[in-house]
Amino acid sequence: MTNFTRGQKGKLADLGLNGPFAVTLDIVSGSMEVDVSCFGVDAAGKLSDDRYMVFYNQKSAPDNAVTVELNGPRSTFQIDLSRLPASIDKLVFTAATEQGSMRALGNSSMTLGQAATFAFTGNDFQDEKAVIIGELYRRDGSWRFGAVGQGFAGGLAALLKHFGGSEASQSSPAPAPVPTPAAPPPANKISLSKIRLEKRGDKISLDKRDSGGYGRIRVNLNWNQNASQGQAPASKLDTGFLGKLFNKPAGRAGGIDLDIGCLFEMSNGSKSAVQALGNSWGAYDRPPYIHLEGDDRTGSVSSGENIFINGTHFDQIKRVLVYAFIYEGVPNWAATDGVVTIEIPGQPTVEVRLDSDSQHAMCAIAMLENHGGNLQVTKLVEYFGGQGKITAHQAMDEKYNFGLNWKAGRKD
Image (cartoon, rainbow, N blue to C red; front, side):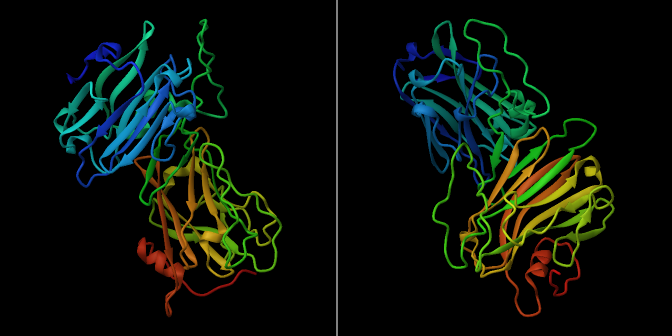
């Protein structure tokens, strides 16, 4: 077994790794949650094909060139370099956390088969929240391993920016590739063009593109309105990288009416709610700079329900709690197959699915917070029901400390 130190490199052939092998990451992090990933990047060092990002939500690359098995602190990647296309020039193995910093790591390691290992601990880092542990890369016709140990204080967002991930934007075309005989496709087809927050507490922090703020932020709720009150949908329809939304057919008797809404707190301390119940539609061009577009009660609107946030004035918003509640129909979230997407110009779309079998009518979905001018999205997906004089709205309010006064109401 060859012991690598930070910055050391070597040919895989010299290590006897001439065929498929395992890359094992043993991350000793105690109570701190650390997510590991493998990024496939092109010759320009950019994320250019989202199919070659392997992590907890996408556990294999095409042709099983890279697969991962997650087992607590141990992540085992199975690698078959011969199955990688010429456009993938490097595999980068990373670790990231939102709960602390990498200085809290215990004795950890990256091991290649039975041939080589790279040991590292928290003493190798300072306040970094994300690190490149090591990489496999092509050089002069052969594959090599490099022990990196490079950290990023800005966490996953900074790490992605390092690989060009923050450059994805529908309004800005990707730069043309450098003309070479085997030129890779244009860079910045961001591997995180859609991010699904899988676990409660998962977070993503999004940097502003410019001094103009975040632009027009769209928070969309869509669901399978055709599902009957006690019946789960026949299929989950999850195709593509992170799935797609149900198209809602025309409503029918016995369907479920979901409503989207939000609680908000402004930077000046004022608080209130935006929702169809009580006709509290908000406003886009004046405070609170949050507007509910409409109320789809028939299920005939395939685009679902939308809240728009004026991100140009995001500096005046402290936090927004996005929620959904079942206004009509027996509470059956599994049957609704509900999904909320948060779309921000120039940023990856954030997706949260409402996939619990909870029988409570109210669901706190996500929290959007202003952290030093940056927008942080946290998955909540916590369900609330009314009890006695306490409504589901009030129970959720008390949980997240908004302190509003609630009374029973109906939609006109």
